Length: 330
Ligand code: ADE
Image (cartoon, rainbow, N blue to C red; front, side, top):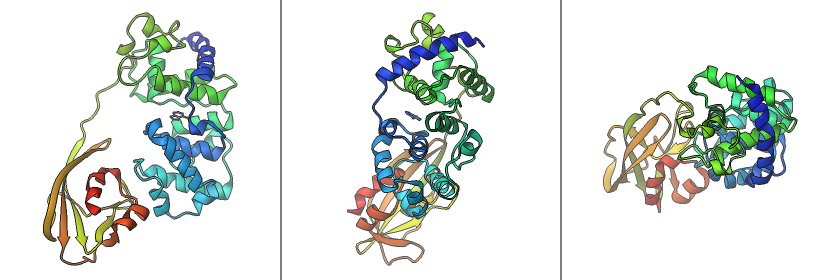
């Protein structure tokens, strides 16, 4: 791999970043904790969706001790709508570890925190600790594959490892800016969907894919697996001014969140059906196709928790996948 190209690419990237970077809330006052929160929130979630939630989360839990002292339900409630809730549970665990042991000081310590994989550990080390640890995600793989016009399959771990080593060798002293500049280029110039904005790219004169007019041939990926389709019935059971809720299992999809009684396939008859509608929700590996029913329950069935609409909105974390049925609860 040609290291000179990467080294030539560093300064133009840093200069571009200083001028063009977006003004994002987590790029202001930075602490280890604020970087940890933002990097976990940004895993698989768009910057636009995170911006406001990051600020609110830090207001509610301003330090690791505050987060460590909260209940899991409170933490999940403050993560509501962001999806991938295991991140919230992991962040909660990480805060407990930090509250007891202090912040980790090196890559191994950061990587050992729950919910922190190689990518996030690299980002936290680069941004919060000033360590030259590469953070290679899909955005970074795309911009490097194009810079080098490299046709290796980016879904192969060996490809990722190779780019990671190349970056490690090129790291400048401004570790945080470099790390975020790579992400930023992939987010706003060398964009994931549609044509890249090469006219605005600091690498336009270096990028081998651009020089060959073949930007969109890269990156090369293997095909994606099809999603599993789950047909389900969701019952919004009403009794007086209360509605039935159940807690999802502690493991798996949307673990620990609250939902209206949810049945794979059809549901039992609990009373008169007042309204029906369909909704779907697409997760990474599963698609829910839901038949929703608003049902007048004959009694407060004891297998469920019963709560008013207000209580549900204020204290129970309900996944966005069920948002369509929240209209029914007044
Ligand atoms: N995605 C992951 N980390 C990010 C960051 N620090 N800034 C912008 N997008 C990101």
